[in-house]
Image 1 (tube, rainbow, N blue to C red):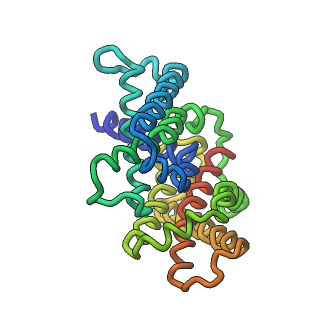
Image 2 (cartoon, rainbow, N blue to C red):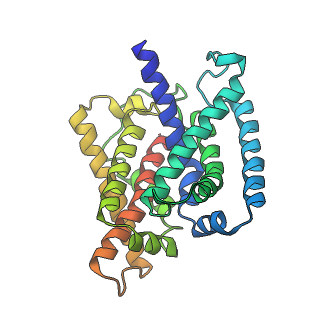
Length: 276
C-alpha cells in the first residue's frame, strides 16, 4: 500500500516537473501570455483552451501519461480521461505556482482573472506533463556506471544556458524582479532547489540509478546546491552580458539573478536527465 502511494506521488510529481521542463518554462516567462489572459475576449480564451486541451487529450491517448499506462488500473474504465484529468490538475498546480511566485497572480485577484490566467498557461504545461513519462523516464538502458560529479558540470552549464539564454534579454525578468519582494525571491530559490533535487534523485527520471549509485543523501543534497549555484552563475553571467544590471539597484539585480536562476537551474537539471 505504501509503495503504491509513493509511486502515485512520483507519477504526479513527474507530470508537474515535466510541465516545467518540456514547455511550461518558456510560457511562464512570456509577458504577452500574461497580457492576453487579461485583455482578450472571454470567448477567445475559452476557444484557445478548448483547442489546446483537445490536442493534449490526443497526445495522451497516443502515448499515455503513465508508465505502463495500458496495464495501470483506472476508475470507470476510462484510462485516457483519467490521465487527462490528472494532467490538467498537475498543469494547474505548476502554472499557478509560478504565477504566484512571479507576482503575476495574487491571492486577492478576482476568480475571473485567475481562471483566465490558468486557462492560458494550462495548455503549455499540460503538453509537458503529458509527455513527461515518454520523454524523460528511464528507458532501461542504464549503463550501470555511476555518473561523475563534478565531471558532468558541462552538462549542467549547457542546460542552464540553453534555457536561460532566450529569456535573459527579455523585459520579463526585470518586471518580475521589480514586483516581487524578498519573501517570493526566497521562495523561488527554494522551489528551484527542491525541484532540482526531486528531478535528479526522486522522480525516477532517466539515469537516476546512475546518479544515486554510491551517493549518500547528504552528498545528493550537496550536489543539488552545486547545480543551483551553476544555474545562478549562468543567470548572472547572461544578465550582465545583456546589460540587465546597468543602472539598477543592487537589490533588484540580485532578484533578477534569482528570477532567471529559477529557469536556468531547472534547465540544468533537465539537461542531466536528457543527456545521460
